[in-house]
Length: 113
Length: 363
Image (cartoon, rainbow over the protein chains, first blue to last red):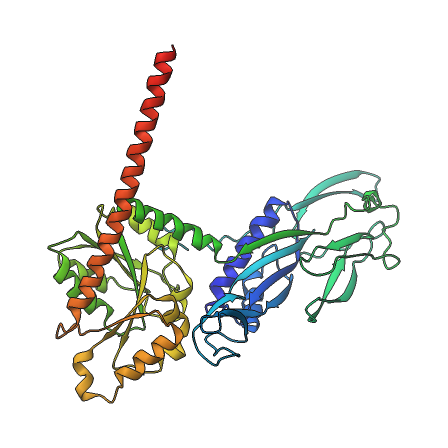
């Protein structure tokens, strides 16, 4: 979903940080993508390459760490693993499941020089 | 680019990178004269020098994470140095890259261990955080003024604008209303809204597929909605992206029309999950269609068990009374917040006055 504008958001964060740190080049960007965040890692990689072209982060390696999904099942009254958004509860099979983990997408760190 | 004010939000590109490295060097000509000159290098401009500088060494390595996943990546090292990866929740490791490079007597030797050119910087920031900050500011602005803001989202052609026009006609005698219209191009929708007599502002997103918190913040400055009024935002017709961009509204209202499929909430679950209310529109057409309204509602509740659903028709007006009552209840709740803000401010003023009296008495 709209990976291009998200990649722009990533680039902005990376560039702001690199400027602040007076970096010459960004070598590595570590991105956390939750399994329930609706962001496709493959699409993100493609867009990242496109948006970084010509800037300080050109050629930087994009490392994606996939964070597993978790949800709170109202029927079971406990936290259960969720493989995909809107999945049924693996314990009771119900859909009263509210995602609690693996929903975010954030820039964890960058390597600069 | 921000399409309201034209500022370059999100498009900030620093061409050629941050501080451009300039480089001075001297030439000795055959006749013995020496001249020196400086020139700047673009970081992606390769420039080979003879002695004193080494070739960059490429170095690949892999990490094993605690969760069992593995990744590998390559670094280009410019010098002999140790570097550290501070991957949170993973192992920490440090490794020197010795032997594969030689800077000779060059200045790179001056780098102390641990002061390497390459380093990790922790960011730990949500990518949507910037938008969320704008949205939070908008939300506070609405709450302080007792304004009810609704963000209407749907696919193109679900009847959002027609529904808005009908809603405005039913409410405009009772409450002040202002409207923001988001579309890629044209101001057709804002013109339809203005025809009802209420203030409307069109935002053209150009290439953008959704409105964001920043655009709506600018719209607020331009429209200046009255205290305790209704602020309606018609988002770009798109069932995907607007789900991820909070605008600071109190509720997202998803509109599904019966000329679409019953399985749309399952196909585009993010939007129906993000919404608090779903309007099943064009219900006057149900007798002519094979659309199963109960199935559509069941699908929507499967992705969002707490969804409030109204069956309506902007054309016939059916079901609109319940929808309008829901808006009125929301306006009442926002007025409560406004009153709380006003009361809190009054208490604060009273407290400051007491303090002032006290200071005067002491003098």
